[in-house]
Amino acid sequence: MATPSLYDILSTPYGGRGAFAREAIPQGTMILACAAPYAHVVYWEFRREVCAWCFAYSFESGKSKWAVKLAGSEHVGGNGGVWFCTDVCRADYIREHEKMLAGNSKRTTAGLAVPPAGLVYLETIVPTDITPEYLDVAWAAARDVSDQRRGWTEEMTEFEVDTARFVLDGLLRKIIEEANPGAEMLDRLVDDTPGYCVGAGRWADYMELQDNEYALMYTNPHMLASHIRVYRFLRHITTMLPQVRSKLNEKSVHVIEQLRKNLATPTDTRALLGRDSGNVFGLWDTATDEGSEMLGWGAFVFGSYFNHHCEPNLKKKRNKRGVEFYASKDIAPGEELCISYADGVSVEERMQQLESGWFFVCRCTRCARDLERASGTPSI
Ligand SMILES: C[S@@+](CC[C@H](N)C(=O)[O-])C[C@H]1O[C@@H](n2cnc3c(N)ncnc32)[C@H](O)[C@@H]1O
Image: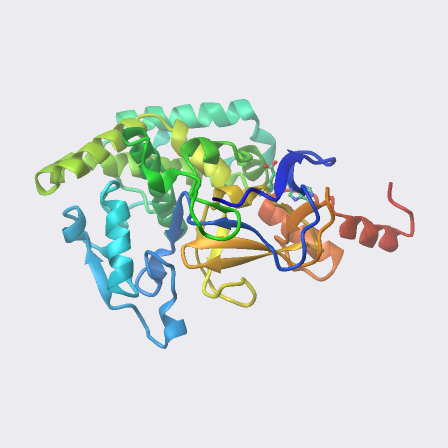
């Protein structure tokens, strides 16, 4: 019997949804375990040091890199490859990816950093340009430009290549889900693991997350050109893939055909990226984030309903491919369950971190108290 959830997702008084305790929860209780990310990416530069299955970091085991490799050519006929800490992880990876065969997005190094004429305006936009209508028009132009263009001459930043790999992971999962709706790996887990455990979720679960596209673009208008470049790049590589068709097995051809169809419009890429911002968690080299190195990021869908509090009552911890959330203090019935997204000491520092990284003004009780103290006037 699976453990039922200890909380409900309800509207918060300050807007949006949050998680609220159904009952008293003692300190140390595991509140939620997300078994795996819906979509994730390990930074390209760490791909030899981070196990592609359990995310173990080689330096923690005294090794400069992992030795167990799955070469691109074994997988789908491409170059590159992924690395694992053990043969067991390699076997687990292959088992899951049998249904999701796809080539690695190759890094492009060549050429000019010049966008196509129809998209040049994206390079000079300012926050006041950004409206929901403007975003729709820009994405429609991206699709039209991709329709007309052949070849790829733009330079991608490393971050854009990693973002493209994240999007690819999410789109592949969606395609598998459509091809095989009964796939167990997509479900909320119902097994004997203690605590409330969930799987990676489905596309529909990911789409339920808050879409932060507008907030991101308003605060960082240059990201619009960047996201559109990621879409066009993915579209470009999938249109190139038929050229290596003879090297691919039947399953891969099917997946790539579906990917090509999916990328004919930017709808799903845009939806993935809109929810990537403000909802994903960093993959850190140690179980807790403190003082460790970020190796990539992942969308642990069901963990993204926990709001931020500057005095949180939950602590999160990575467990191999998954993330777990524990009560860090005793929690009363009805209390909101919150993690911390920011570690600044002063209220100004925290507000700055949250506004620039997460695009919101913190409404937590600690900030209200600190602001009240700073201004000398009681907050309402
Ligand atoms: C990961 S989501 C959390 C779930 C989200 N509230 C929802 O409805 O899906 C993060 C977003 O929640 C809101 N949020 C989280 N913590 C907050 C806080 N302390 N004050 C105000 N808004 C907060 C912000 O809009 C932020 O971008």
